[in-house]
Amino acid sequence: MRIINAQVKNNAELVDITIEGGRISTITPSALRSEEDSRADDYDADGRLVTPQFVEAHIHLDYANTAGVPRENASGTLFEAIDIWADRKTQGFHVKEDIKAKALQAARRAAEHGAGFIRTHVDVTDPTFAGFEALAELRDEVREWCDIQIVAFPQNGIFAYEGGQKLISDAMSAGADVVGGIPHLEPTRDDGVESVKWLFDLAEKHSAPIDIHTDEIDDPHSRFVEVLAAEAAKRDMGEQTVVSHSVAMGYYSPGYMARLLPKLAASKVRFAVCPNENLHLQGLGFQNPVPRGVAPVKQLTEWGIPVSFCQDSMNDPFYPMGDGDLLRILDSGLHVSHMLTADHLKNALSFITTNPAGNLGIDNHEITENAPANLLVLDAHSTKEAIQRKASVLLSIHRGKKVLSRKPEQVNWNV
Ligand SMILES: [Zn+2]
Image (cartoon, rainbow, N blue to C red; front, side, top):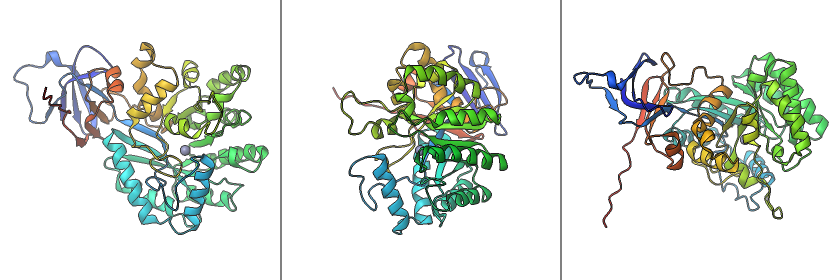
């Protein structure tokens, strides 16, 4: 197929994008196309923006659409959510087919908003492995329209939860793609440090990347991010290491940040930041001025450290909202990070396209010749307009195949 009159990267000159064999075969100026050159499978973008498909780099699909069962999160806190989740697992609500159906619903919503790639954390501190098995099946079943990566995530810790080390090892042996972790919830600070080292060993054993829930706590003394960066640097694994959340960074002193940022940049670690959810969870019940609870994305970006904006949860005990809509997440992320300047806006889609593609190890996630044809047509004529108007996805193509399309919204004024 061919997408004609497409705008790429805010360039004024429109282009025609030809897709063959799952790849972008040619990109040529639309102005050079002759009048007679019209094909039955042409899609006329009419000057609209074509971008790489969105990449959701941090979500919990096994938790999706479980809010309210066995009970609502009355306090709204992260810790009550963890308790509710533990109760779900022990009270018989954690059933494979149900998890799979709810996760599919969530993945479809994300795809409708333009996602073609998802990295989902899946709780493996559950001896039944119901969530892991559900997501492993789903990963195979949706391959045609979405690539899913599974992070073996020990929600209750590898030391804090009895048998945690064996469960995460078993999940990696059973086909999980990425090693997860949660050092700030291990019994002590020393246990947390020990867990990071142990998880890196596990990742090395499986030649797998690593993606750790890091310092997701309103505590300036939670500093596992430096442990992660040091360990990644020592093992030359920075590019395969993702620091997820890292909200405690929002509390660090300027003196400590001045020491930390160069070390993070040198280690080559990457970040996954979830602005909407952490704005909800962090600082809950604090006196004014309430902290923001989001990692300092602007500083990280200015240090050349790749950051992705991510959804995290969809309608679960941790977060009652969430629609898998990465443009909405990007909008919040740019606001809370004070990044609405023209320079930052110009490149802002990289937070939900190329940066998360790097987290997932996806090569060549660009609109260039020979790149895999994973792309979107957005109902907008610039990056700024796409974010400002939360543009709808008019066409989504995954591996050269049309996944879904919709018509531009039409409003009929009656006055
Ligand atoms: Zn998370």
